[in-house]
Image (cartoon, rainbow, N blue to C red; front, top):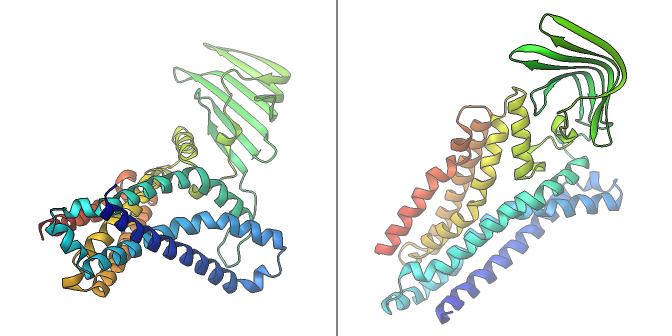
Length: 357
C-alpha cells in the first residue's frame, strides 16, 4: 500500500469513526431524554432490550451521513494543505487518490445490505414487540388472526377459513376446494384444521369427490390433504412489516400474495429498495470526496453545505420513489431505484469534472 493511500485512509477512517460514534451516542441520548417520562415507568430490562435492538437501525440511518462528513473534511483538508496538488503534480490521478474512500464506501454498502438482511429484521421485530412511546406506533396486538380468509396453496388448492389464528395454528369452519380443468375435483368441509406433526389435519368434516356428473361423500374424524404442506408462516406471519423481513422472507411473502391474488407491489418495491438503499453509503462517500477535492477554490464550508443539500434531496428522492411504489404509481424496480437513477449520473458528472480539473 502506498504511503499516500495509508495517509488518506487514516484521515478518512478516523473522522468517520469519530462522527459515527458521536452521532449514534447523541441520537440515543436525545431519543431517551425526549421519551424519559415514558421510559422511566418501564422496567430497566425492557428499556435495555429496546435500545439494544434500536442500535442497528440507528447505525443504518447514521452511516451515510458519517461517510459524507468524513469524506468532505478528510479530502478537504488534503486540498486545503495542497496535498492533492502535490500528488497530482507527481502524476497521481484523482481517481487513484480517492479510490481508497470509494472502496470503503462500497464495502460499507455491502455491509449495510448484510445488516438489513440478517440483523435488522430480527432487531426490528423485537423492537416492534415493545410498545414505543408516541402516537401511531406499534400497539403490541397480535396481527396473526383473520376472519373470512381465503388462501391459495402451492398446489393451487383454494382454502377458505371462517376464522384462522396464526398464534394457535388452527382454523375453524374450513372449506378446501381442488379444481381440475376448471371443474371441482375434491371438496373438504371441516369444523377445524390444525397444524400437527408438520402437516395440516382437517378434523370433523365431510370429504366430497367429484367424478364427472357424480359425487361421492363420506364423513371423517381426521383427514390430511395431499399437497397442502404450506408452512404456517406462509398463511399468516407475525412479521407483517417489511422492515421485519429478510430478503428471502420478502420474496416468499410476495409469492404468497401473488398466488392469492392480493396486491404485492408494496413488498416488491421494498424487495428492490433493500438493494438500492444499500448503495447510499458508496454514493455519499463518492459525492463527499468529489465535492471536497476543489476545496481550495470553492471553499470547504460551501462544499459541505452542498453535500448536505444533496444528501437531503437524495433521501427525499428515495422515500418519494418508495411511496410511489407502495401506492402502485411506479413499477416496483423503478420506484426503488428512483433516487439512484437521479443521483448516480450526478456523481458520474462530478467525477468527470474533477478528473478533468
